[in-house]
Length: 190
Image (cartoon, rainbow, N blue to C red; front, side, top):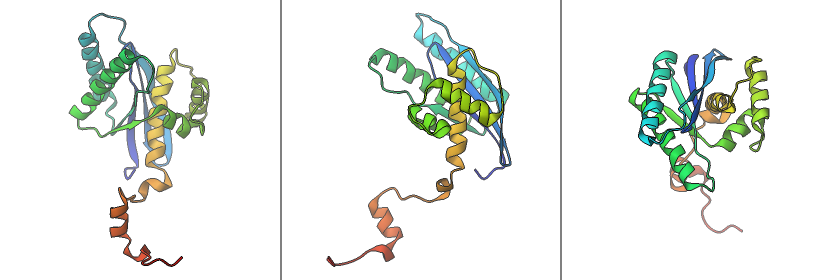
């Protein structure tokens, strides 16, 4: 991250409860701004729920004014209908960020857990405990959706500030060879 002051909004999408968490980066320190959930509630009108998600994310963006938007990718479960609902909720949240011209990043749940705890199979309690230590807060949210969203924001911060994030990684072998002609060994020397 080039900017020394940045705000990251993390979202844990859901069609009934959506978690959100925001952090502020000042220099090399990270601070919790806010962490909570938005209860969409159970309704038979799926499109009204999507409208509420869009409105809430737009409101969060307007209030928090993030520089980056990080969202958890849906995990593949056995229930196709649940996956479809979750994917729609995620898409609406992403659309709200894109509408506001905020760059979007998506992270798999295992990647988030790995980034925060060092274990991609960590329990939600372990993730929350590590976040409390990292960001120095004691509050325990009523829903893990809030701490999951905060974990997505912190994961994004870690990914952007990793020593390897500044490396220019090639997208294919062809691109690698073009960029590194001196590393080609010609002929069969074995």
